[in-house]
Length: 160
Image (cartoon, rainbow, N blue to C red; front, top):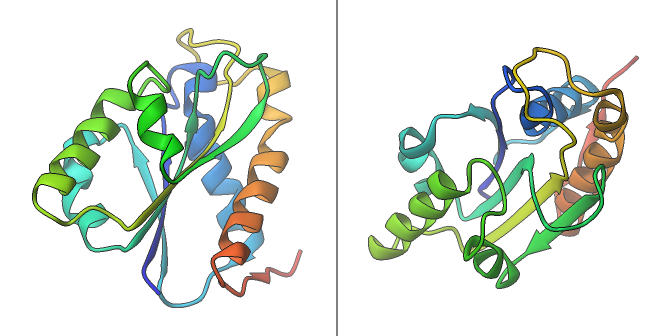
């Protein structure tokens, strides 16, 4: 098992940081087994190339623009992920799209990619997320837990 959970986003731009905040909430609530790495990728872009290349499965957690109403939590998997990359799915899409294209060219792309995202309300400069999007983080964590379990990962909740 070689799974990377990658939280993306800029926490200085309000809801744009929802991926990073969701991964932080996940790490606060769950213990993951060996073989699963959880990384705050922030806005690193191409700096994540080697980290992603060393995993067979990639789960990206990020703000996404799918055309769905604000606050909608979505999971995009497998072959649907590149379809969304044709348009602008996320503020990090260009970097993530470039990363995946580069890894495909070098035959190091993960065998499975999914995106767990939330449609943001605000991308204004602020350390605070909007209340409606902050309230969606538990749903993102639940979806992440469901995704990991569907991949055969045994998760243990941390003691409160």
